[in-house]
Image (cartoon, rainbow, N blue to C red; front, side, top):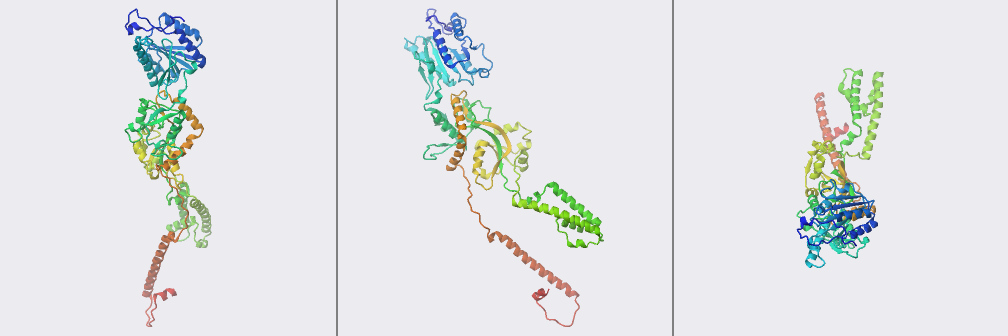
Length: 632
């Protein structure tokens, strides 16, 4: 071994004032290159990226020898050297390819090159990274000095604390005197010393396959149908207190990676799901992820998110118009242009009869009534005795037209009474404005609609009421829907099961939609769970588990009395006389009134005729009213 093997020498005189007689412990150049070579033989890296601290001297002989030997080991591999003076203007994720090896030459966690490396590798912290640590002078003599050993351990721990905080997943640390350390993150981060016993196959393991009970903290709030919980298990074979589509998916993920869930709801001040605040906490690193999935409509939040667990539209749910008014049947039997044509033809026939009538004086009202009778095919029989052939021919043509129009209308009416006509539903922005329907939505949804004034005009936006999610959840009762509100398609599928057994639907989705949006889990930037969660979500989707969990969440909610399903199992009943009671009462009243009117007419007729009858001297026996009525 060359005892003078190259080290990237610290500018220690500028940083740590020392005497010229102090010995400087060198990094073993050949050891570092040999380790790089063995790892490259295993993973076949195509790119090498160097982050070099500004505290290290690149112009001395030893550093030049190091890079000369590196290029000798890897003559064809492209490499990139980055310092703070020559850093990248764009994130590395936009141009680097995999597989790549990143090497960070640093003097500790407070070295500015560490933040530069983290910033440039944002989104690709999962790249295999080797930290080459040059410890401080106080840590160099750790083999003989206990105090120096304590400083050395503290510096190693500080570096790995920073590494875990920034979510560098595949890491290896090399330092002076051929020391090698790796980080085992689960169940709690721990540093393992591999000095003298390392093998290249032991580095960069996929630890996330088994998290060994790693605790994932997340608040569990009420978010039907995605997440809801109970104070008791819903069945005897699965002791599960968390339910919902996202909840079941998340619990399955924990079982897939052998992790543990910790409910942090006690630390949340809101008594309802405030997704905005929770996403802020994820972006700050308070939570690594959430059991609550969300529709990726809130892209302004600085959070990463998982592989999509679904693609949803955000649509307006409106009341369902179950039936048309009964008086519309007579009108809707024919189209509007047909009705206009019939009205014009009625006027035309009226004028024709009036002008062609040989009777004097002519009567316009009689001609109009005759026109209506003809169109309805109820022409009087005396028209065949009309004195002129011209009028007989006219009435014959009108009779044919009456047959055609009457049969057309009667056939259409028969079809309407057999099957009810389709109901015109609230479906567009114009329909909402016409129906004067109030729409409740969240502020973030309102902001997106306000950016499209052509699609959502001011008349529609005036129908919108802004509410928070808590108020929206309180009013999302599909069996009392007197207004509209926004709902994602995954929630619609859940609500649609509630009215599956109803004879008539109560609500429906309109065509007023925004999207589609990804339905995802929020994640902290460069989360160590991203890769394994993506793998699990794809397995769950391909196995059809998402559809199964949607149905299971619905029946769990029914079992826990969170929702109600209205089942109609009544047998059809035959009509009784009570059904015809109104008809009988009306008919009886009509008979009485008709009898009274007839009696009054008879009395009046008797009175009028008695005044004009000659007075005779012979007296006659008076007859009763009944006898006179029978005689008539």
